[in-house]
Length: 282
Ligand SMILES: C[S@@+](CC[C@H](N)C(=O)[O-])C[C@H]1O[C@@H](n2cnc3c(N)ncnc32)[C@H](O)[C@@H]1O
Image (cartoon, rainbow, N blue to C red; front, top):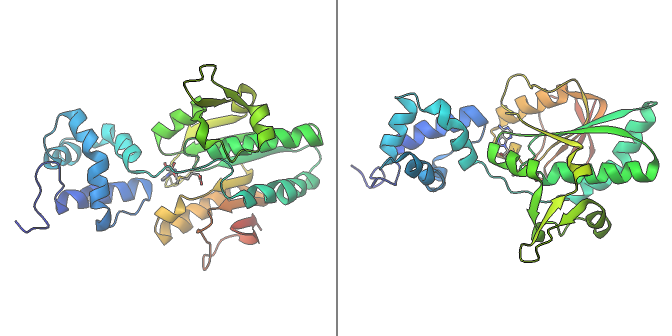
């Protein structure tokens, strides 16, 4: 056995890593180059223990040779996804939404019901940011009907998002006025947590959706889609396929927001630039 291939139970052989990497990439779109082996090993160790396996070889045999993959897949995906997020992340997107996108979308129609979609929502910071902004917008500029869909592949983050409970230290970026209006503080001072107010939680519907699915199980067309900081983990062909499907769910004149390091350069898509990593459907 070569140095690189050696493994002592809780380390993974190259062959096992390759099988896992191929599965993770095919299922979720997330690229898994060999440099991720240590990360995957670390994150899946808990799964090994919870099944009582003593090494990755037995775990992989269970997954790939003995039919365990179907039950285990959501746990593997939960373990390997990166869920970093923030409230009001990339603030300029929300300024653009309020100052330009919403007025133009509303001006185009008489009594619009606006549909917004956060397509990789993690623990909910992004869709709840949208929900607070929409609630404020409706409060100031009169009745406005809207709905917000928030989806992610990872079940663990969706459960947290539905609960809408967060440690106090991550709500800092939410403007004070909004914090007062839309966050509830725990009565117990020892537990520094806040909860999104029910009237805000009620405006967001959470669901599991895999951006790699050929067809998205969402209804009709959206005015605004946020798909930020997920495509960076995909290869170019998958990025383009996802963007084509998302564009297919945008109304003409609707807006797509990508993460700050994501681009559509040299892709042939019915989208044109409208702002920094913001695109409109043509
Ligand atoms: C880094 S977080 C970004 C969260 C949020 N959009 C933001 O910008 O703050 C990326 C999210 O994409 C999700 N994800 C990864 N692959 C996915 C896929 N194939 N379909 C849907 N969501 C996926 C992960 O579970 C994770 O919650």
